[in-house]
Amino acid sequence: MRKKKRLLFVISSVVFSTVFTYYYFLYTNEYERGSFLKISKYQADKVFQTRLLVTEIANHLTFLVPILKNMFQWAVPYPIDYEVILQIINIFFLNIIILSIPSLMKIIGYEIRNWISLLFLIPLSWNYVIINGMIDGAGLYYPYDIPSIAFFSAGILLFHKRNWASFYLVYVLALLNRESSCFISISCFILFFRYDRRLKLIDSYRGNKEIIYHIILQAILWFASRFILSYLFRNNPGEFFEEPHSMIEFINCIFNKEKHWAMENPLWFITLFTGIWIFPLILFSKMSIMSKKFLIVGLIYLVTLYFRSNMMETRVYNELNLIIFTSFIASISFIFPKYIKRVA
Image (cartoon, rainbow, N blue to C red):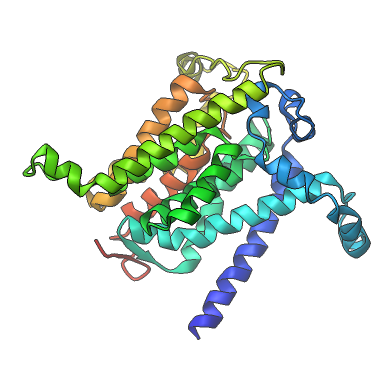
């Protein structure tokens, strides 16, 4: 019975991931200067060109296009081409996220029913499809967004298991996917560093020596990847980091009821993540220590977005989607103890 339930969960994950991907591609568009075709041909602006993993994978899978055409073109209402390869990759990574959520919840102190993981698609769809593509957002799609969340989750799980060979394979791939891979290291340090104020500094170091060494190694790899990718594409147009626009200006538009380039009605911004972000703030005291630590990572992510990204864009909150969702589940665990069991 347990195996049948697990199989049903996996099948449901594939089905819902496919539906999400279909509407994600249907209601969003590419940013011309960072289109997946330009990235795949190494012609995109630097800030997009350095996020090349998914299009590089897609380039090596293009041999599947004629095979897929012959087998499934009759069932698909649009041409099967390079973009379909990206859709398949998107479905694959989205499944990794959904299937990893129960294990991630255990790390932050909770056991959940597997089907609860499927609820992750609700805030994700709201941010990436409904606001971003259907209602009042920029309507932009980038092939590396969903994979960045998958690498984030997988990286934390593998770090927790001390499976270093698999971890560093995932981490290197994450570095080639998006620079926000640094939040794998930040999360692992905050979650797994053991602090006891009663211990001397040298004793605290000895107890955390392995974690410290690995975080330092990851930092070296991160900076090296940023330097190497920046150098390789130094002649591409654009800047390595986009110059972020003022979030303060956007917030003023909310209060002044003015239009903004990111949203005609900036009030939609407060509905990000379908509003579930409010629960961890209100019910913070009800959460486990580990889930509180994970929420701190979310705060660091927001601060980083403020200084290094266009924070008013609804689709820039990649890894934060997972942090907010798991924190939400943790905050309401006392309401649904039958389905969300606190274990730490």
